[in-house]
Amino acid sequence: MARIFGFETLGSSDLVVDAVYESSNDGALKGEPIGKLLPGSGNMGGFRIAGKGEPKNWVALFTTGEDADWPDTIDPATGQFVYYGDNKKAGHQIHDTSAGGNKILKSAFERLHDPGRPRDGVPPFFIFLKHPTPGRSRSVQFKGVAVPGYEGVPSTEDLVAVWKSTGGERFQNYRAVFTILDIPVVEREWILELTNRDYGGAHAPKAWTRWRATGKYAALKAPPTTVIRTTEQQLPDTSLKREILMHVWATFKDNPIAFESFAARVFRLSDQRVTIDEVTRATVDGGRDAIGRYRLGVSADPVYTEFSLEAKCYEPPLNGRKGTTVGVTEMARLISRIRHRQFGVLVTTSVVARQAYQEIRDDRHPIVIFSARDLTEVLIERGFNTAGKVDSLVAGTYESSVDEAAE
Image (tube, rainbow, N blue to C red; front, side):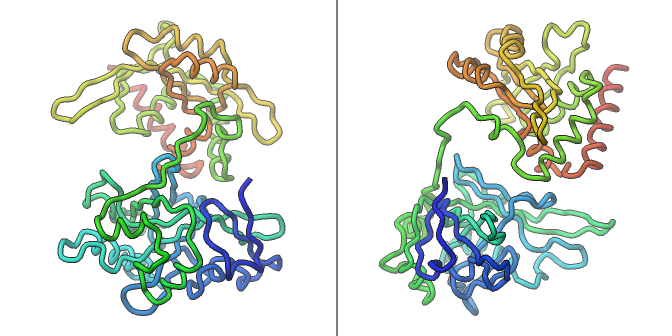
């Protein structure tokens, strides 16, 4: 269970990764915790910018993790953080925002890539996630100190202007890639030093000073301690994901054959290196719902490894329902169909039972599991974040399968 700091202690508290900082119990905006933890940051919006003029003292980035159109994501295993800017409504140019968040992103990434003064004046970015506690709806969780860019992501891809549309009107917003540094604790003394823009003060964390001096990222990487996910970890963790999942299940529960094409489409959407060669016919599928290839190496000289995909449209154990889990029998069926040098893929609207999960991991079977949460996250990240948009994908999948059958 995460450590919790009470509201009355915030002004003197250190920032501890994954600790929760409570808001006041009256729900008032003035009781929002970020402004207490980082004085001068304000108490509204995704961008909380401290300091007048240039450069800034610091930037606090707040995310709910539930915005369907702008899905901010943190990958604990790699330390990569993807954050979307603050131009989220049509009628404005990309830098024309009230908080000036997109200008901050533009400035930080320009400084990152400026060969004349690399990283000079780039402020630290403090990441906070919405994390309500009982009776305190504005509580937040501290996720770490981030800096722009990520090792291996080229300068042409770490800050990208993406197009969206609403009401038929198009507009642009930024998609920014950050690295969360290996800084487990931010001491209160460093925050005081940053107030005077002393970025390299005596209390500055080593990972931060090293990045400023050399540009080398020491990412906070936290690989999972177990490869067997619990039922809770396989199920959607937000209301939006649950809504999408139940819509998918309701769409295909009476037509599991059609779900096979949809599952193959979702797996292809998850990675551009995936190619689906065939969605097999139910009567001659040999235990495989789809077959395909995964590309390795450079595009000019690729190597492909084949996979077999199994799709299970089972009722998810949500909303008080017991549901149906994928068990040992189903997993054994998929394993038996995998040929030499192939791997298997399971896509389901439900979860894999613990015994089945344990056996495939203990025996090192090459099986990729796309459980209910994975399925919804792929859909949302690819823009299919409403029931209507999922229906459009379903229609496109059906039309594609009909065309392929005709050929």
